[in-house]
Image (cartoon, rainbow, N blue to C red; front, side, top):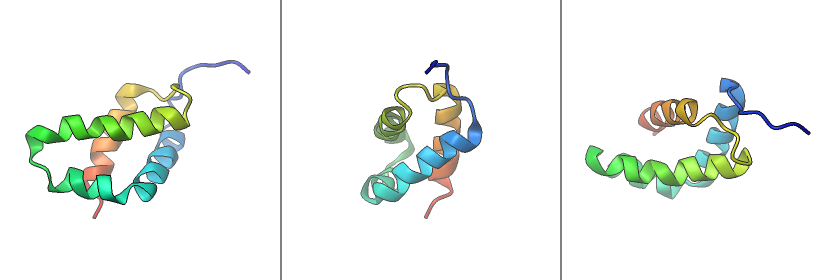
Length: 74
């Protein structure tokens, strides 16, 4: 199996949705936090998606989707 970077938006979003569904407490913490603390909290979600993707999710794309999804959830 070859291993390139995953840049498929739908694939990354699916992993992200799974992480969000399974970590609602962290989502709540993120959304209740002041904006200056949010970047640090994003690391948890990035780590979980990277774990699911075996480290292959495109980090730039992941961060964009993550912020958009978390800011519109709830």
